[in-house]
Length: 155
Ligand SMILES: [Zn+2]
Image 1 (cartoon, protein in one colour):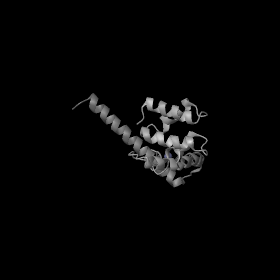
Image 2 (cartoon, helix red, strand yellow):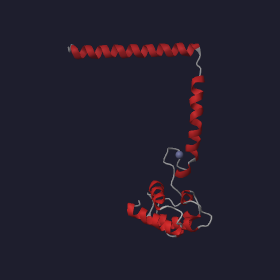
Image 3 (cartoon, helix red, strand yellow):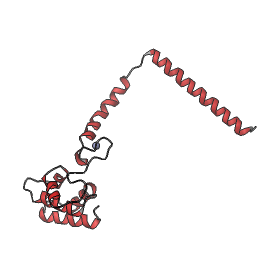
Image 4 (spheres, rainbow, N blue to C red):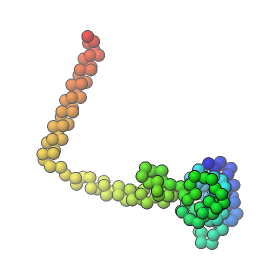
């Protein structure tokens, strides 16, 4: 877990290596995405990414890449060397910063909303549902009347 001071130092170091990366943005990103990592792990990965000519943005570090291999070689004892996993149930094989399951669920959601009104039930099923609802309402009304009576006129 990174402290506020460690995040500021890492951001300042990355900014020295890449003056086009603003310190404030680096702090926000590190706090939101890598704050649960070890200080040295983030320092190694961030230095790798910052010194790589193919890197345009520090967020490249969110992906699985050779920088996490460098972290491992550097002797990390942190739990996950590769990338932070999505915390959603069933998503833990996907990276937190780029979860394919979350993306797919977001895409699926509007379809489900538009599909819902077209879901039709048969007239028989509608009658069964209606009877069930009426029975439930009667049972609730009966229970409420009984409890109220018992409270008002205890035996
Ligand atoms: Zn997810």
